[in-house]
Length: 74
Length: 257
Image 1 (cartoon, rainbow over the protein chains, first blue to last red):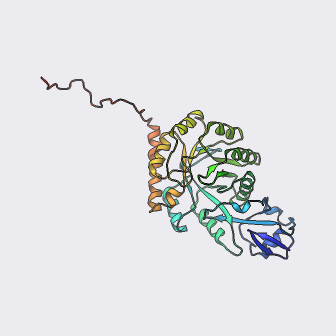
Image 2 (image 1 turned 90 degrees about the vertical axis):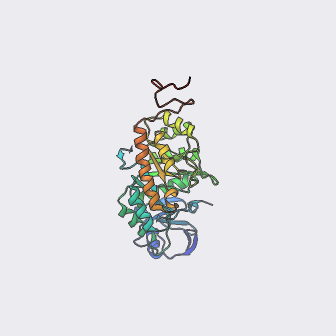
């Protein structure tokens, strides 16, 4: 299935968020996630089913200072 | 300053963005000795450890963190960002920014009040970036905020305190509410003025990060906060329109014939 990961079109095999994060290389990373602008807590990742075309945001503590246009919904 | 039941060790709040290197950031924080540092969330590339490394750096500073929603333009964005920040940073404090105007990065005060209400209902301790508007301040307090963070001037402008009258009026209207001048402070003299007006704290970032010598400027702001607090406690005299001789005229020699 194809989803958007941080605004990039990405093909994944996993159908669940927790598995997708491992597949995408975020296994142990200290990140927070949102799908289509809605926060998905760490505790809910293993039950959150991913659907075609959804927009996944993966954020981490950062020093740089840019706007969070990433959350804008179309 | 005591806010949300916590006594801050310093009235200086320091942002962690825009520094030329993590080492300069760390040294600036060490010298400034802030009561909190503000932190942000940004997109993490797959396989990158940049976010993890930055978080380790911040934790090593041993200063309480205040996550912000910098750059958010809607209530929904701000709330989602705050929720994500609470999970990553492990604190329910959030500096709430909802930007309404791009050129001046002016807060959208309508969205701000709504976001503050919703976040407070979710258990967040909200530090709202607002203007000096008294009505907005009243609404923010009613929404559950226990601190106000009016701008001195637009973010990153370094213009100091643009509206002294408005900031003085805000301070006078809510004498019991902790207040922080957030944004616009460019020089230590601006910080001193903020404290002399009765503000409890200042929040700065660009003024230090983009100074020619950030570490030197961090030291200058640390001292400015001390000076400003001392001056406020010493009750400064009021300005007068007429001169008043400081040397007594009584007993003055008269040489004119």
